[in-house]
Each structure stands twice: as structure tokens, then as C-alpha cells.
Length: 121
Ligand SMILES: [Cu+2]
Image (tube, rainbow, N blue to C red; front, top):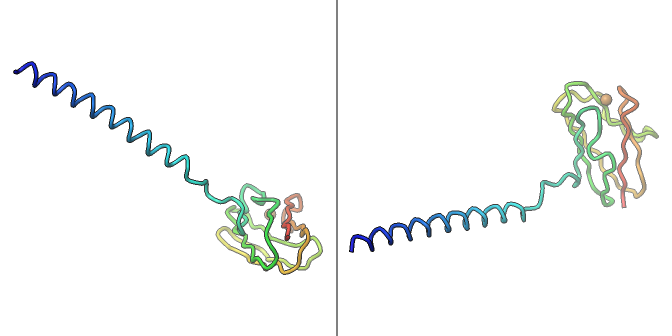
């Protein structure tokens, strides 16, 4: 009888281990099915002296918001000067609504090598 108790305990222990791994596998499967955070959408991050994404595609009528995540000041300035944010300090945001379709190239006035575009479809 005592042997049965030992066997039952061993069985229960194994069952617990199996269930634990089954559950942890299930939860990790769920996390891989969760879509990654949107890197596109209608926001652009300015970080490490670049625009992320540097080729944002949106539909006409979308308001795009830029956020400066750098300590350095940046601007969001259209190459044709149709819009400009002025100097953005760290944490500052700038929004511009794109009503017409086309490719809108822009740059940073402080760092002209920083270029990017918004493609409006
Ligand atoms: Cu800049």
C-alpha cells in the first residue's frame, strides 16, 4: 500500500511537470502569435539621427506625427518647404495632415543628411 502511495506521488509529480511544460509552451506560442508593435501606422520616430520609418506609407487624409526621441534638436521640413516643424527638442512632437497623394520628401534642417519620405496613396 505504501508503495502505491509512492508510485502515485511519482505519477502526480510527472503529471505536474508535463502540465507545467505544456502550459509554458502554450503561453509562449500565444506570445509568438501576438503581432509585433506597429512600426508603420502614422507615426515616425526621430532617433539616432534618422527618421524611423524613413519611408512611411499612408492613405490620403492621414495625419502623421513625428516624435523627437533624440537629445539633439531636429526638424521635419519638406524638401519643397510646404511644411516644417521648426526645432523639435527631445520629446516634442509635430503633426502634419497629408491630403493629397504623392511622395513627400523631407529632411532635418539641422542635419541635412537626415532625409526621409512619406508616400501618400
Ligand atoms: Cu536633425
